[in-house]
Image 1 (tube, rainbow, N blue to C red):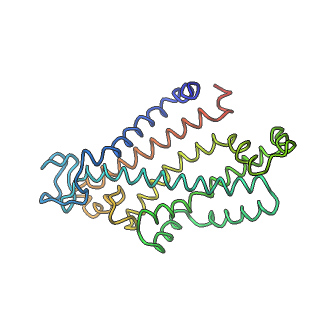
Image 2 (cartoon, rainbow, N blue to C red; image 1 turned 180 degrees about the vertical axis):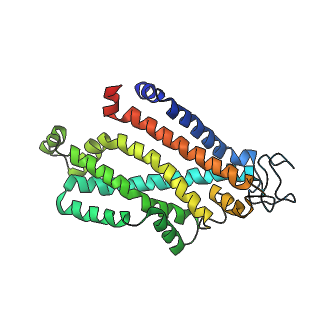
Image 3 (cartoon, rainbow, N blue to C red; image 1 turned 90 degrees about the vertical axis):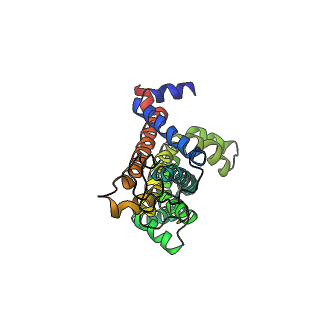
Length: 277
């Protein structure tokens, strides 16, 4: 662990990204404490500029606190991004592991299924899935999961193809170990580094997709999100710039921070890069 942190801390941008990400996570964790009231609660001070009438970041067209919406939206975005990424990684690992380990017809069938999902543009596919279901957190998570897992499957398949003929795997076959045990206990642990890296980057993509769906009105109408705030304020951008600007900045710095952390993880976990350092 000490060696990992030493390698990770060499990337100053990654450390900065981690600090920003921790601040966003902290904001999401204390959202109910610093803003205990309903973020949808309106007031008699609509379109208040930042700092006026007790609104730190201003209010929207019906007097809702933009700062409260951003704090509660952070919780929504991070939760959806994390759950969707975990589900996508789980599905992708299963498909990629079986395809790479068994090869042949199993590989052909699983990869053809993967290619079917990859031929459809991700965001359009997510819109279609949410439209077929009903706008809710569950449907958004399902949609993001469905459009995200093929990339993980491709990665894991490549890793398994490169490892299944190694000496330690052949030794496991000689000892009579079952295929499932070999995949889970011997090969998969050697693939964790790239899976962790791609998983961290997928969280950022999931946040962007969730924000885009909420912007189009396909998010959960009962849950505050950054995309919803931007969508609500887009028609008043010239007279109330703060409604779109601050949640937009929140999306920007969160996605940027996650990408920086992902690059730092890649530098710290990639054995080829470690040899150069």
